[in-house]
Length: 88
Image 1 (cartoon, helix red, strand yellow):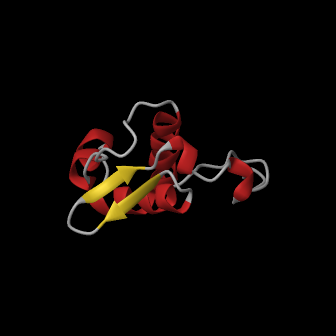
Image 2 (cartoon, helix red, strand yellow):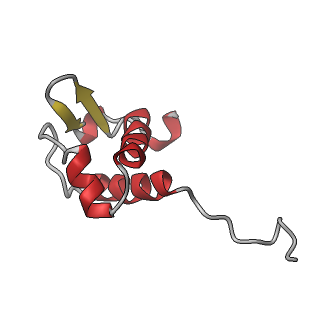
């Protein structure tokens, strides 16, 4: 049996989704201040459960990349309003 410290570490699915979406946001693939795709649209795109997508969106909110308005959805935070990577 391999040593647990030598096994490759796998990210949980919600983190994989969050990493991909964060890279797309930082690359400018989504317009700032515009609605971000819905949970159901992202669930379909990634082939994941809505709860997985919800957790990924929580990470994006925690990183200051999106904000969520009740009854409206998630919006991409403009780059000049995002915390810098070292501010976390």
